[in-house]
Length: 130
Image: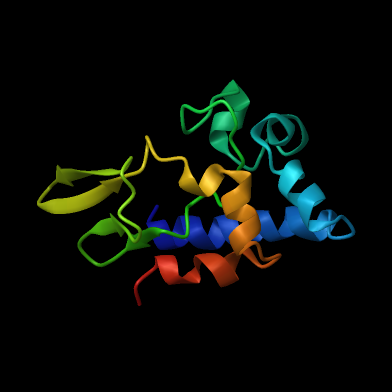
């Protein structure tokens, strides 16, 4: 699966959840996307939920910006648009890939509130170079 394929599929899942809870306030929507709630309420949203496993080792994890708007995918590399101090890179088959495993920036609720949109793609669209 390419990143673009994942992105398109994930956007549909995200929209379905947001549409379901669209009567809630912004804060309530953000709270809904907390890892602990998503594992119980939306087990199909992420394959890691089935094992109650987080993608990042952090106590508080919010899944609203899964995919990260700062993760940019180009033709031959991926990189962090904000050059997070907790990010890194991996060389594989002659390509440079961003390693976001230690970065929690987009999973913090203050970050999500700052860039919040009911339309996940409006924030995430820049992550794929076209």
